[in-house]
Image (cartoon, rainbow, N blue to C red; front, side, top):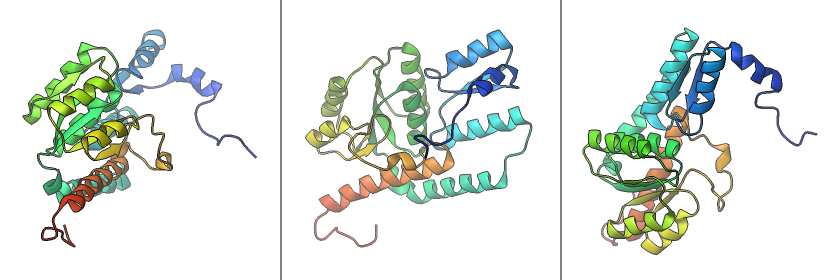
Length: 242
């Protein structure tokens, strides 16, 4: 009986990384330094990509894999992408114009802000505890391209995040377990995402990255929004089919 499942890279795999044909680093803050060091010391070309949350970031990741590997994208992956695009189309009417507050790690937030903006949702408050003007510049660029204003803060905290929501209420909060206190105080739906998630079990068994992860995130967001609608609707507005 094993304490841990077989997974990960062993020492020989790590040593052999210096002979690789390329490195894909997912996240500027969490992965880029190692990839650039491998490039400098071992001449392994690297590309720094966003973590593949949602459609756009996953498209870029798949395309980078295709180029490094010199292969075509498998048909099964194209089918997964088609499912995500189809679900986005079906759910768009419920997402359009909804204001969202996001908190978490910078690499997570960049890809999620882009994903939500592509759904025509408005991430109006985006806060990370990690310092860095580069993060703020990237979030503002995403918001500007999508046509909405954003309150973005690097080296922020949960108190600031709560104050932003108090000053400009939102339709949805997306963040870790610590957000549950803010969600309760402000009576705002919460989608648990990021790290840590301490008050729910089983989430580790479901993907959040890639096309299938995008499906999962969409389902969780829509469920939170429609649960709130069912709760708040009058008897006249309470519908069987939404």
